[in-house]
Image (cartoon, rainbow, N blue to C red):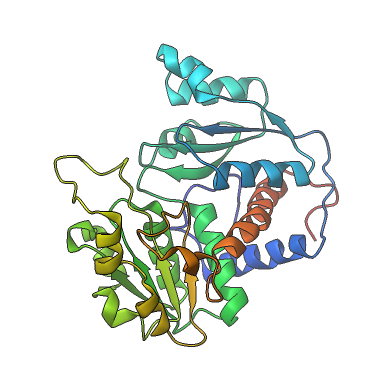
Length: 308
């Protein structure tokens, strides 16, 4: 699979996923690469981010790349410059890789159509795709169970507005897992019904191997259609309470892409509990993003001796 760009998980095969996991594990175990020259990267984040942004920065630094600064609020975008012209500008100064997070779904399509030399890595587009998060989630699940086929995985919460839900549902289906959705019915996305079964969380907690919780994405919910919840009310109705967690299988794990609203989608102490893999996901994220960037570097012929 040519990885000049990574914008969506839609075209990924099982072998593509397992390759990324193996490569990320190799980095975790101390693997290093040598670049053929100084490589320049720029992270263009038009939405707030802690984990994804800093994780890509650390991955780029560990791979020996030179990071160019970009601040959306002080860029020419505030003067009306289009995203395409912004990316054409950094392509013109011979930046090698752009990691982009943008509120517009499918923003990357116009960039790919422009056939630029710069490689585009999608750090999240609106409620569309979040490939690096999805791949780090696959890594975390694979570490736990060593397979995907037949695993029962629940994605619970604000489904409709979640790019994580979309990417993970697509990828888990390809990998042979059984996907379930839970949360407020008004927040179930029509386009995701083909990927799994919607059930109340109380019916799912006892049967699933993975309980993947999602944040309520208030920034994407139209105020006209917003469902108003007090945090405690949402937790009792749709979240992972102590009582629900106690009913989970002994080998089952809890995941969350974060940021976590403790006491809303999950009881606070469960975030740090024995079943939680939430902070492990963050560690895996750095290594998976190293793997993602390495495949891009390999496609561009920028790794000395190639990728072994």
